[in-house]
Structures are given as structure tokens and as C-alpha cells.
Figure 1 (tube, rainbow over the protein chains, first blue to last red):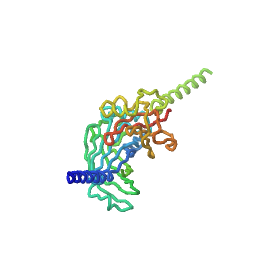
Figure 2 (figure 1 turned 90 degrees about the vertical axis):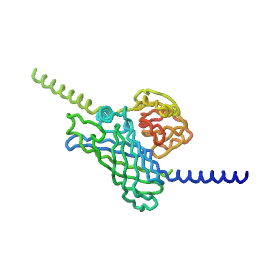
Figure 3 (figure 1 turned 30 degrees about the horizontal axis):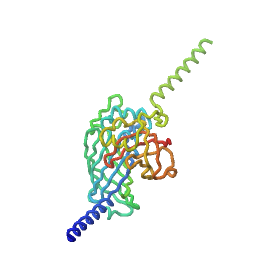
Figure 4 (figure 1 turned 180 degrees about the vertical axis):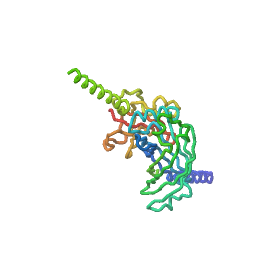
Amino acid sequence: MVQRMAKISLVLILFLWNYQGVAQDQFIDRNGVVIFEASEELFEEVKAINSTATAVYDAETNELASLTLVRAFEFKNSLMQEHFNESYAESDQFPKAIFRGALKNFDLVGLPSAGGEVQLEGTLDFHGKVKKIQTVVNAQLVNDVLSLLGNFTVSPADFDIEIPRIVRNQIAKEVQVKFDFKLKRK
Amino acid sequence: MARRYLLMFIAIAVGALAIVGYRTLYPESRNILKEEAVHQLSAQLLFEHFSEENGDQFIDQAIITTGKVTEIDQQSIFLDHKVQINLLDTPHSEIQVEDYLTIKGRCIGYDDLLEIVKIDQATITN
């Protein structure tokens, strides 16, 4: 009986140890910044900022996931914001943009204190379509805060978004997406 | 004389049209505090609506919600662990964990990754 209890205790201790280990290796940002820009020269700026994106990084597996609520993209021009939500992103039907991927050949422990460049690969799920994303991010760890700074290019067509002919020359065919995550160790 | 009045009339009409045109193309941004709240419910109930996939009615609406502050960080406060609030301008130093707050803000949706509801442009109303 005592032996059995000891075994159970050992399993429990190992489980809790392991659980604590996993929990300590998670980094979270609940107010990540995602910016997209599709401006054309001579026309009004087409740019929106979202400052409430979530990003979660697991240092055990190197997986990175990010969720952006589409309604929280802010444009300077509120009419443009309305058009974006209603006619292009169709935010009521597709309220989230989700990235799932991983940092490749990355070891957080071996990251130089001045930071370094890391390959990021994954998929972006937006407007009901999924697109593969490959980019290089700048990673830096300072006092339990992991900064991930990067950008990539997509096009409206990648996500089945049709730009009406009347505004086609005012919106760039290539959309620059930038992200700035400050993930705190949990 | 009549020509002078006509010119003045045309100038005023063009000016008025320009103002109307500008306001149509560049409408003022939303002021959530001035909007009438469409829903009023507790933070816990708001979370339950979303976790049961019944929260679409709240998205992009001005809502009032109440709950206990369970966490405060640099940019957000959290009500009952389940609702993230980004305040417009109240300094976080004026808020303490365990405070009961009523806030008015815009519900921007549900975050499946962290299982929290997010509200921005919020103001404390109690």
C-alpha cells in the first residue's frame, strides 16, 4: 500500500514538474501590433493598424500562433474602415485572421542578447482562405520579453478579395503586412 | 447688384457643397462613450455567450459590462479573468485588482487562443 502511494506521489510530482516546465516556456502578447498597407502613390493612404492582436509562442516546440480580430483594424479614414469591414474583409462573416506556424531551427537559449534573424513558416487563415507564409523575423529576448518583428507580402487575390474596378488603381496589388509582438514569459 | 448677390450665392453654395462632400468622404470616427449601449451584461455572461458560440450579436457594438478586476498590465485590465479591456485614457494606477468596475466600450470579438473576450475604446462608468 505504502509502495503504491509512493508510486502515485512520484507520478504526480513528475506530472506537476512537467506541467510547470511547459507553462514556463510559453510566451504571450495580448496587445500585439499588426499593420497592413496597400497604398498607391498619389492616392489616399490605405493603411490600418491593429493593436490588440494575440500571439502565443511555445519555446518547447517553437510553435507560434497569432489571432487578430479583424474589426479592430483602425484606419485614419473611418469611411475606408467601414468599406474594408463590409465589402472587402467581410468581418461579420470572417471575424478573425489566424496565423499558425513555427520558428525554424531556432533555439531560444542560444539567441544572442543583441537578437538575431529567424526563419518563420506557417499559414495565414483570413477571409475563408489559407495562404502559406514564409518570412524572416527579428527575434530578441530581453528580461523575459521576446520581441518578434517581421513583415511579409500578400495580395487581395490570395484571400479571394475582389477590388472593384473603380478603386483598383488606388489600392496596391501587393499588401505589406508588418507585425510587432512583445511576448512575455508566462 | 443682382450679379453680386448671385456670385455670393454661388460662393456659399460651393462652400456648403465642399463641407458636405468632405464630411461624407471623411466622416468623424466613432465615439463609443457617446453611443447608446446596445447590451448591458456581466463580464462572466458576456464570456459565456462567446464560449457557447453565441456572441456575434455583441461584435462591434457599444456595450456595458461589469466585473471584478483580476489582472492589470501595461495596456489592459481583465475582468473576471475572461474579458480584456483596453481603456481609452484612465491611468491604470487608479485601478486596483479586486475593484468592481463597470465599463462602456466596443466589443471586438472572441480570442480562441487565450479564450478571452476583447473590448477596446473603453471608459469606466462607475
